[in-house]
Structure formats: structure tokens, C-alpha cells
Image 1 (cartoon, rainbow, N blue to C red):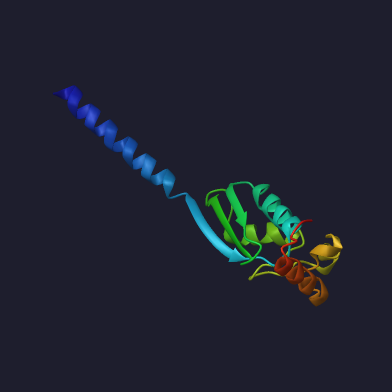
Image 2: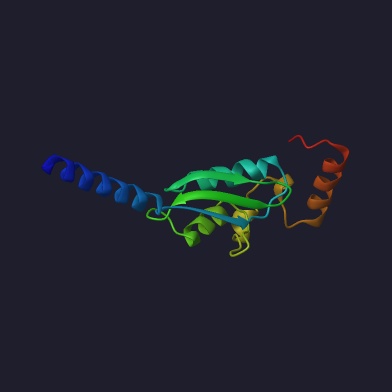
Length: 129
């Protein structure tokens, strides 16, 4: 009987620890400006290089970046910082002009001509970069 009690207590402790560790994983989605597949790669790479990020998926059409991350390793503000450091504005922060200017010309999402060019490519079905 004594061993059964010890086993039950151990099982409950393990379950409590497992539940605690899942609370440290969070998911968030926010808007990130970009226009193409090159932007997608840059945004996702910037996010994945951030300690604690487990998943990063950016949607070219909706501009939504979905992230799964460890809250013990990185904060939401740090996630935004990582993206703007790569040259892309978020719905919360703006990349410095000097960093934005360094991204490829076809990725200049602040330029209406570039945006329109990508829209025309999308309509014609030519989305290659």
C-alpha cells in the first residue's frame, strides 16, 4: 500500500510538472509588412533565429505572422524587435529606415510601385522571385 501511495504521488507530481511546462509555450499572431516570397523567407528566418521561437509562419496574402514560442525565453516585444531588425514593420513597431533600405529593392513594401507590381504578378499568376 505504501508503494501505491508513493506511485500515485509521483504520478500527480509528474502531471503537474508537465502541465506547468505547457504553460510556458505560447502562440501569437501579428501583422508584418512584406510583399513577396523573399520577404517571407527573411521574416521567418528572423523569427526562427530568436531564442525560444519554435515555429514561424508568415502569410504573404494576409501579412500575418504566426509564432509559437517559449515565454520563458522571449517576450512579445522581443519578437517584434527581431522582425524590425530584419527590415520589416510590424503592427506594433517600425523598422529603422537604414535597415529597411538594405533589403532587396523588390521587397520595399513601403513603395506603392513595388506593391502594385507584386499585385499585378499575383493576378497574372507569376509569383516567382
